[in-house]
Image (cartoon, rainbow, N blue to C red; front, side, top):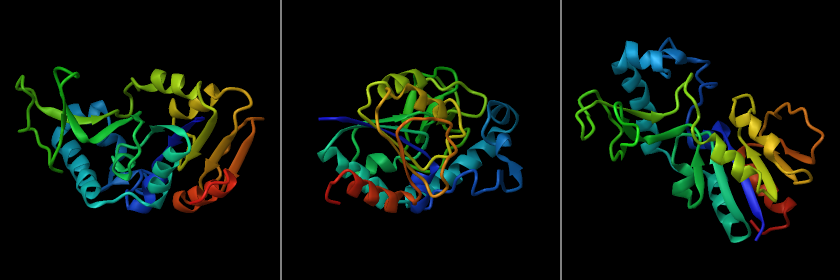
Length: 229
């Protein structure tokens, strides 16, 4: 079975009502996102950071996977699929995809501020400084913030280097290091890009652009791959 490696971004979840930073215009309640999604923000005003992520988490608990997520999950009948996602939601999981690597963390998880190996699943949307780990330290969102390293990027590069097909869906390819993963795609491997706003990619690779939203683009990909959707 051929290996299809997928890089998904914010556009993948847009149809499920998950707002992106771009949708917010870089602002949230008149705060620059850097003031609520960075280590400095956590040090300066952790309550505000919790408020920001609580709102996002509440929306996620209310959201459902869209047809794009579902069609991608159905492709597991035809390919060995590995999803590398920049998204912090769990919509790929809920749609039924089985192999998912989260580059930027997971919104429904929290971790200790004194021991990063202590990670907890959340069954509620609200998190506060009163929520602590087993060592008594406050929990922070299990998110890779602006200015932090991306621990999973090396594993992601290894996965991409094994691809027989590579799909990019719902990302502008402007966020690094994730955007650099395309450089690890083996020579000659077909690349498909689904996004209504065609990303500018300087490459002479074999790229097929599908300028559609995720659900429509995935249906078109089924036709291109000659599969029944």
